Length: 404
Image (tube, rainbow, N blue to C red; front, side):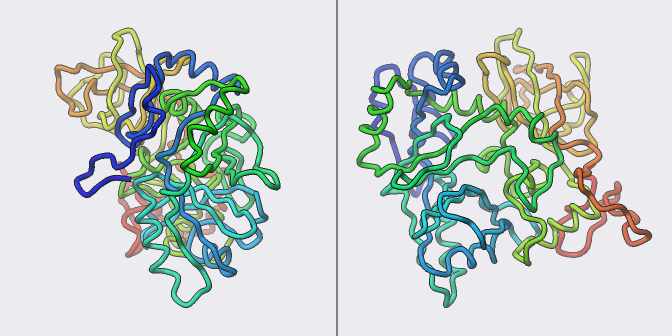
């Protein structure tokens, strides 16, 4: 949702609230907080909060062929998707890199795709190019519908607004995981759903929830909850080299046993034979200096005494102050990066004046790059794959290498 020169094209009416501070980056246009971010995070954790996420992109796909068509061109099995049942999908390029990600829910008449606001026009345009002679109708409905976030673990019911319940981190049928079991995953404690309301009713819908005792919260609170749940996001964790294995996104967004789709060969080959070049990690940042790095800051291996000029092993993708955990971050690292302590540049630019920040690391995707259900090696065919030579068949973009 940007204009021709990249400035925010949308500004929520709720930014007129007293104490509202606008967010920046991918959340520009809505509030970062409303004056008390700690209280807002606590309200969200208690389940009594509503978040204005009206900058979210909404794409509607109608027509009798919609589910079979989306099934054939995306990473998810949608053939048997029942009305008011939520899932998510990825659109991959021919090399298996993530281009789009969207929450998916069907209301019985149309399939709704929820994505980053800046990606909605491109996603709708790509879908329109791919429809050929099929009976589908694609609409970028972002201008008509706003999105509210709620800490509720429930699908939308009959007669209720279109609602997408976040499936993270439950491993879906046909999916797999690199990280911990579902019931041990920190994301299992996060209830979250997105509710579509007519954009003209946004303020009234928020006021109705406030009248019921809920608190309006900003994206500081929602991002703190997401980062603590190790939940990847298209606008932050994804770059032009990302494959879904690196972010543990095969849990919820990829079906490994469905038919062919663009990028599917890379998905299957890395899962069965190779190893993702990079891996997502969670970082506990030293908050004693009262500073946090910016997204994009370089990450280096080693503790506080490590050489701040050593070669980076990755970058910070999301960073936030959590009301209980303190400053925390998600980072995308080389698969070969050590599993121990890290240091992070104080500034994204690496300016020495910013200093360095020590960080403890929790692995999300393990360094061995092997999922829990990886098939056993069957002989010479697999020799060398996933090693340090960056071996890969033409068209895989180096996805099978170590990334070292």
